[in-house]
Amino acid sequence: MGWGDLGVFGQPSKETPTLDAMAAEGMLLPNFYTANPLCSPSRAALLTGRLPIRNGFYTTNAHARNAYTPQDIVGGISKDEILLPQLLKTKGYVSKIVGKWHLGHRPQYLPLKNGFDEWFGSPNCHFGPYNDESIPNIPVYNNSEMLGRFYEDFKIDRETGESNLTQIYLMEGLDFILRQTKAQQPFFLYWAVDATHAPVYASKRFLGKSQRGRYGDAVMELDYSIGQILKWLRTLGIDNNTFVFFTSDNGAAVMSGPNESGSNGPFLCGKETTFEGGMREPAIAWWPGHIKEGSVNFQLANVMDLFTTSLVLAGINPPDDRILDGLDLTPVLLNCSQPLKNRPIFYYRGNELMAVRLGEYKAHYWTWSNSWEEFRQGINFCPGEEVPNVTTHEQKEHTLQPLIFHLGRDPGEKFPLSVLSKEYQDALSRISAVVQQHKDTLVPGIPQLNMCDSAVMNWAPAGCEKLGKCLKPPESNPWKCDWPH
Image (cartoon, rainbow, N blue to C red; front, side):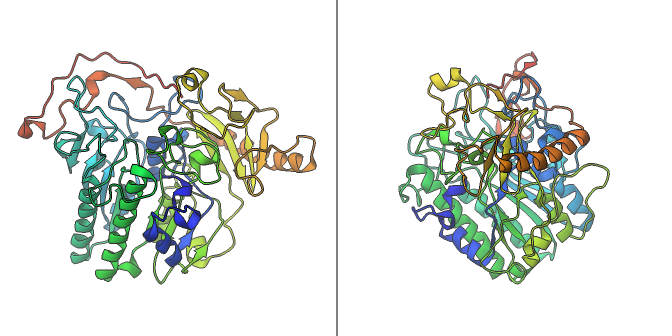
């Protein structure tokens, strides 16, 4: 989902009444960011509290490339990382993930091996294949065994977009909450649905109901489902004791076309890019009786802050044997206090620090949308909003004289400050000091997204024997993954 998909941020199509009400009952964070413009690295950052360059969810196969965990990826979340559910377990929390994992699909990387007690969902996204038996369809797991596969046992109609997956995920989430409440057990639910990822889908009840085609239908169902979760917390009488946070893993995929992607509001480009549209996310914090209703806070915040904040709320000390990039947001959330500090936002693309935001200023050290080769094939990461010398189709270095924008006056990153102005020089001197300190202390993790191999695909996941769904893998033949953008 994109920043501009929420009614409370100005989306006129009225698809998000629940999320808008959630914001009215809680806190809206307009300056909230993901840690990467792509799915897998941002999810790794959420669960580790660390930038992908630190936790290993990046590639060094080519410069500044977005990498994730397709079926043929060999790697996954590093055993050296400590994930949020592992830490929450020390205080008796039971943790469940519902939906998309995307941190590696080989057995050692799956959720139950990384601190989660329960899982219902898939290790990869649902974007294919579509019943092509030369490549296995993506499995859907219940805990440690597969229940079936997308497009076979878990139907997604490619022509109509109909699928009951979001409703299945909703029921799984509600059931988990009920069981933990009855057991008086503290819990962590990571509800990671993927209906707004192309090919988008919705159940019959929502298909054709929005003004924005199938994507809008998916947003409506997502919004309805979140409403059911919040209502369930109230019904069970635990809403005052449950911290809820809504956000997205990256900006809307504007390259997917109008019927398969959302809106990034006033921000430039979208998913895959380190412009604002790729990494600024819708974000709402909700906790009745604790977070002031109808509050808006402009604190620069990041998905990695949810790691540290959750630990603090659970009474757990964050690990002190590693650098954490997440801050504790409780002073902002609970006291509506002044911003914690003038913290930076780092925009990475693969192994390269592309840009840095400090206060209202954002400096681009590198610019790149996507390659000329892809662009000429009709793949456009910034359709209808290209900015000369900014949304470049070759990797352009600006390290000696970065492009600097004032995001308050220019959220669309269209008008770089004049390098001769005092404003530019002042902003540059402050940001340069932050960048230097960051680079001086950076110890990159071992890259996990360099190697691919067809033999590691989802040929024979655990549980396939019972279902008669095991497929024969080919001989192992590893290669360096190719990441085009």
